[in-house]
Image (cartoon, rainbow, N blue to C red; front, side, top):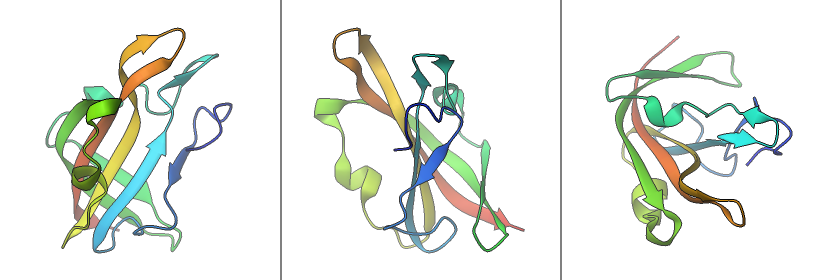
Amino acid sequence: MPPAEEENLAGWYEAGTTPGETGTAIVAGHVDNAEGPAVFYRLGALEKGATIEVDRRDGGVAVFTVDAVEVYAAKDFPDEKVYGAANRPELRVITCGGDYSRSTGYQGNVVVFAHLTGGR
């Protein structure tokens, strides 16, 4: 996860699959911070069929289509479903979500499930 003070920064899990390659790529970012909304503030508002573009290190852009947007309580987070291997290029975009408590913060996560549908 990027540092909280970098509200417009999303982080790719570099030890995992590169976005656009076969497998499950993970991108995470903050929903908000002490200053207000952050990069994934509206992530939960995405709908099935929306597109997500990921700039790649090689200069290309991987284009993904959203399959689902789901919210999980931390205690019910489905690790295998989110992080498990895939036989096609897939993307998971993750941020905090669910109920919020001033003492403990967000109680869960918003996860967007998407698959590669193009590139340029």
